[in-house]
Image (cartoon, rainbow, N blue to C red; front, side, top):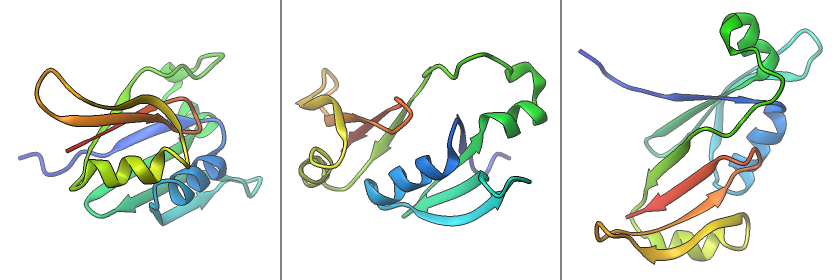
Length: 126
């Protein structure tokens, strides 16, 4: 039986990413792991029922050699559901770069999207 799934995002700078998710989206750091150079190599972030892991490119490639590339390319979006999408929109449009304005989708949901500090798209919906 599956119980949970948590995204682990490859990033160039874990601290910068932790700062974005903390300052802009108000996630809290559950745990973090420094590397041998004292820079963060991994962190788990959480807000309400959402968990997210971020890991340095170097650390992930050491773990999974098949991930070795010259550049990290954005290749996914995160879809986050909230209780009040209009309230989240008013808060986030001042803190983050909008990828898409608040709108009604073809499937009847109100949603908008922002870019995180790595260029990933976070769609917020209710």
